[in-house]
Image (tube, rainbow, N blue to C red):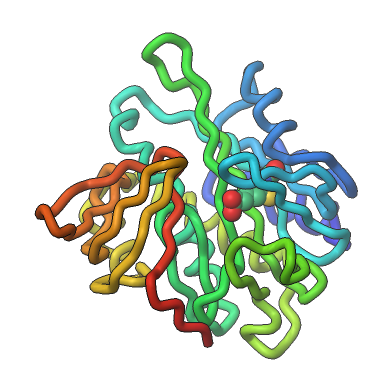
Length: 263
Ligand code: BTN
């Protein structure tokens, strides 16, 4: 179990994590955080659950977090108006924070555009960013993060649409979930003021999976094939296709490498 009192005593991390809401069990931390964000929950509000029974992934996929096995958290961020054109990169920024947090534990991970983290080519964490608007004003972002930490958090093979693993399998030893959580929060707090900066985009691209490799982007009926070039400061993906270089927005796009290499 995550020790609520211990976690509370370590918050906030550089301004993130207060107020703090903890649930032993919840449907979805993102759903709860979105409700809070409709009210006056401030920037940095954190929702953490030990178990999620109706967690959501991108594109209406399910994301389950069995008790005591993973990390399920949602963070409310309130961007200033001047940041609105840079929020497309928040998913990659959160993936970078997860990658850095996992590296502190001792293992290298890669960022899979737009919102996943891979260890040995297998999905280990996912980010679901949900934005709320009032007219043309972006009022809040809820950044939902799910990390497979223990082996029991990895769904059975037949439920996967991408090969998956967990941090402890990659690392070969047990991990303190709270330390990992605090590391991820620290990364988000550090990068948030530098959203869209050259330094952030450079770090995302340094850790990006499949650079220079043939990939397919699939969104509904649309399939775009090309060589992955890099992530742009606005979060779009630059691809070299047969008809030249193009930038593809996140939308409902999912990325598949044409030659999947697993560790
Ligand atoms: C994905 O890979 O498609 C994104 C997965 C995001 C899962 C997290 S777990 C915490 C938060 N609450 C949810 O319902 N979803 C996100």
